[in-house]
Image 1 (cartoon, helix red, strand yellow):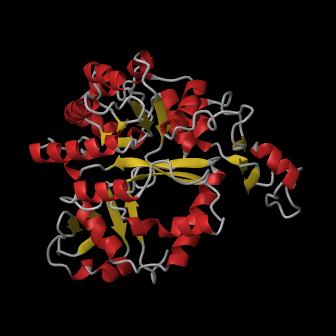
Image 2 (cartoon, helix red, strand yellow):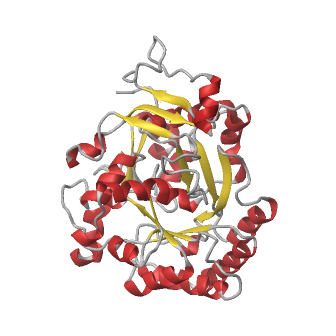
Image 3 (cartoon, helix red, strand yellow):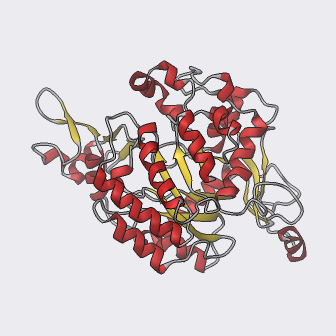
Length: 423
């Protein structure tokens, strides 16, 4: 399809496929062995087939791509925002960019400065380099302020990769948090709590949660975490014992739909019984733990909120199998509440966002189908006919005509009306 252009297609974190031009551009066609931390599939004659696996191989290929200019990055970011608006999204919480240093956010801030940012962004900052996590995150804490920014762009907290030695990825490989990683994590958590920042930590396995909650409880005895909005992302294997510990800390959980792709592989490793309560949504709700919902996009899952909502409601994965037990399913309204006001809780905005009430920010979407009544199978295909942020249209399919221009693009409402909507 594109013989003269290098093409790289990454399938979640499973594998990547390169065409012949990409094999040449990345140097894999000349590589005798495998890149560190990765593997190159080869045919019987030893020639690369175009399929590679492992983070090391992915990084090697991504590193071979030419750097875009800052302006190109801003244009690409704006294009991504338009795509997200088309799904009905008005804002997002970025749980933390994997390996994202401060300079990687320059194009996002460029859009914000020129008033071209249309998506409400809430940012968690991650560690960048293994072995330097405490120093790097303490630098963020020293030079930034939590919740600094405006209604469009705001710095929020530390996460999702707080320490690489505490990051259990998808929980499908043997994993243990060592004493050195625990000590670093304690140092980071103590500094984060003292500065009054939220923290979001990736944890799939209950054994990882054992260590993380041990540290959180130790810090909680010194600096209460109750009002800091500490959050666990994933929590697929969360036990009843650790559910109670989360509740005692006032911590929340982010439910994402990465298992919509990974349920079959997870079942092979964890067993069928574990998938019946992965994640244990009924137990979380029974304990009164705040629940947010998301997608784990864009490298580990789809960005579609409707696929995530379908997964929460049905418990099915893309192979058509329903593995999650009925007591751990949500109604459509409960799932939508988790996705909207539940996510607003994470950023201390539950009074301003996530609901249609007087005084809230005027962010909403007009959908092309009624999410509450369409057949379950149709939920993942929902999109937005109109998306509005702060009273101003940011996306229109052309189906909503009384507020669009003759060419079908969204037009801004009159200034007086926009001011009214924003109030």
